Image (cartoon, rainbow, N blue to C red; front, top):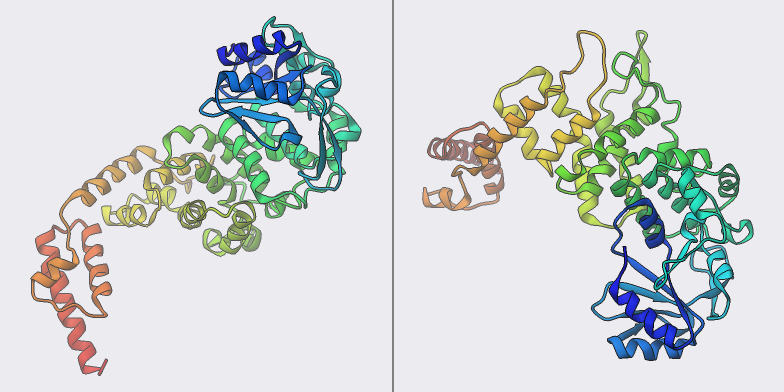
Length: 454
């Protein structure tokens, strides 16, 4: 896995007396056999102005603060950096003084990175692997290990990055690294940086649960995922949930949900739905007559869901998706069990922000059960009902202009009349008949309101 643009830059750098390396995730993923289009190179042994001059010969250089020694080329997908020293000036992820030092050497340049598997460098021209901290060994053994204990704790984001890498690659985190992570304060991180790591775990890992299990082991759930922590040890009815507590169930659901990411409309929002769907059990779980229940948890838990998601993102589309889908999450399996008339499933799909996603979530959440009262989890039934719903919604239906053309004057009650017409549509009533029924409904309602003086 090489890059022709990187090689061209490296040739010029060599002529100027320097050396160019692939660094970071590009090297790691190459050794893992994973395609990575994010090319990062680091240039040693020449001054920043000399590098800028080289880049000018190739294209249009872009700089991101000359003091940071970070460059790019306009229109090209490559990040170009120079080695630098960093000194913590505070407790936040960005609280660092940065000093470019082209002559620091590969060992010191690699030392500032977070984990050994990310510290490896590969000479762009010769292919020589430079590995000062045993990254190749840890990569082969599947271990996430910090490099320098003194500098590691200066950046709190590394706690989440460690958990994220463990999830993405199904690696374990070294015990010493876990110990360091336990003592790091995550409260100074921005929600944007936290969400960035969460997205990578959700969208790139086959088992996103490893991200949260790692944070649990580090005792790092309190600041950003406190509601999730409250599900640990929260018991469920063993008939429907023999797997154990709500935490265990949630971890299993997000891992199963990951298998459906390529089928849903919004994979990240879908995974947040999977993560938060049972938070309501925190406030509704109780024991009655020897059985554990969490009645109406899908509705009563919404304040917890809203707080949880709001802590992680400002994106309205994401919030709208999750806040709409969580209250609906029980309905697919309930209806698949009862096999009601089409109107019931039509109403469910019509209420959903993403009707098809609701079915795939039901598959992820499908109880592993024993006993005659178990939900069927009949996916084929739900998919057939979705097809019928889509057929229904594709047919002509009553609109406002139809009511007006039929002689009904617009008024404040028009919304209510159209809502009634929509119910008829969901019931499968053809447009002509639905229009007649809607007009009859409107006239009766207006007559009744007139008598009441409304």
